[in-house]
Image (cartoon, rainbow, N blue to C red; front, side, top):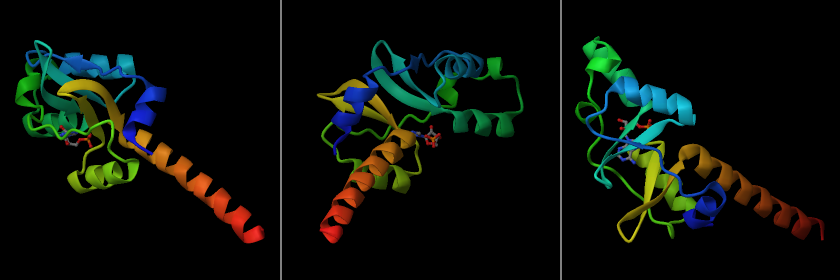
Amino acid sequence: MVLREILREKGAAVHSIGPDATLDNVVQKLVEFNCGSLVVCREDRMVGIITERDILRCCAARRIPLDACRVEDTMTGDVVTGKPGDSVEDTMGLMTEKRIRHLPILEDGRLCGLISIGDVVKAQHRIMAIENQYLKTYIQG
Ligand code: AMP
């Protein structure tokens, strides 16, 4: 199974925010969209990613109000991305190795979706259930 199949079901929506927004704006959006990350875009170009974990880190390190912290100073600028043709198995390995739970997906350099670790686990679970069923049928004849 490849990521394109997950995105076909999930859709291509990627929630984003600008680099000059504040962490308070980020929290409001994360709650509004019930998600754990926002891609940071400047004039339609992805320049970073910010997640719940970055907010926690900022709170612990700076101890100043969220509306005094800028996204650009808190985000991760070097974004790890995937492609629609990447396999679920390889993506799970990549996300585990890099310790990230959110992966923007690019096709021809354009954002076409975002895969979370939850999406990957769900897909992997489905693959294993199907394989299990085949094996049981094979063993039982
Ligand atoms: P997460 O586990 O996704 O909440 O993110 C943990 C840390 O990795 C945070 O500092 C994020 O900014 C960063 N991060 C999350 N996703 C990515 C990604 N796709 N590329 C680079 N860094 C990321």
